[in-house]
Image (cartoon, rainbow, N blue to C red; front, top):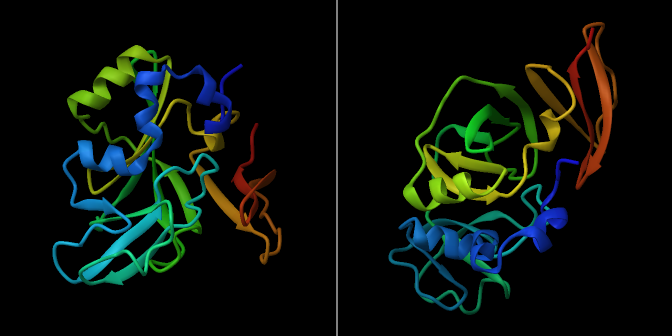
Length: 204
């Protein structure tokens, strides 16, 4: 059975590769401007602040904050700050080292990190840095998320929202929204965080 979340794969990943789950370490290895609580930011401004480790997904705990100097007193324990990337958000799946899927996420609003308007299939084939290519070639499943070509997350599983259908899109529905698919759509129950499920194109 294909793993569909990070909780399932945690015990299957080699100990020497568990650093991938720590987004601070990942960001540092990729050369981003970042640091844990207590490390000074290089200049005053807006930064993305997230938990270093979050196996539950859905952008839990992520927010944009204006930071200046020392971060000891305004960041929560277990979080880190990082420079902000702006641009297209892609999620790419690899199976046995080969890319099999790439989808682009469209946000409902720039200020909400947890809500998406749509995920749609695209034909991009991004190039990966060496440390991620090595993981891709060692593990059967790999998912990479990036913004503007910059990797922000890596998972040892595939994108679960596109696992069991051939729809070219997924449209999330959240708990304060009504379920009302049109004649060309069907609704899939899949609760996660604030999301209760999503629409896909009606399957034949």
